[in-house]
Length: 229
View 1 (cartoon, rainbow, N blue to C red):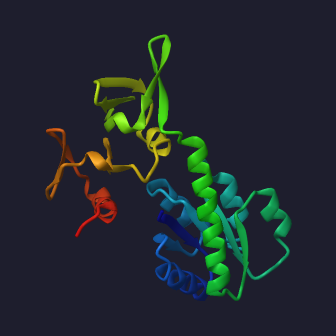
View 2 (cartoon, rainbow, N blue to C red):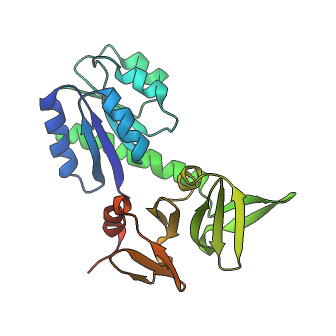
View 3 (tube, rainbow, N blue to C red):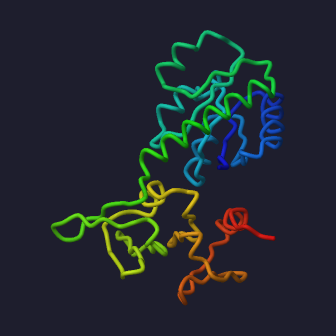
């Protein structure tokens, strides 16, 4: 399992060390590195992040204030030169607490802890099926039956082996509730099941004779997930 991570630290030396540690760690992919929490907020609006390495004392917005603005709950690892924030770390349920100067061994221990937390969460919330509301009843859909998801205005259409199902939802909500190891977003209007992809060209992919566009901003993530020989 590879985690998308974000570094937020106003000290350039600390950012560079963390970037080097991330590059050395196969289970991590750097989604961004920024010197303040405001830039981090903007990155989080456009990218899915599993783990944040977060400095606490920063100008304009502190790390703790950033946590309080989050609508999603990524793993948080505090990175600070002071031990005074242990209580805040506990109260905000952060994953771990790294003290500067940083060492790779301690960094890796924190990363492994974050990865274990995510795996436990996925096993708890993703039992292999979802329920969708169809008229006055709830219909169970196995995730393995879903070929792809398509946006239709304020609605989402689930394309499955047995047919199509239209539900009232958003792509962001659906994406957050599908296991990332099995599904990936390839376009602002499409999420596909990885093992259903039959063919890929420069700008499109094919699932069961259906041609699905690949958006430029999603192409690199798609290619990195593919098992290319």
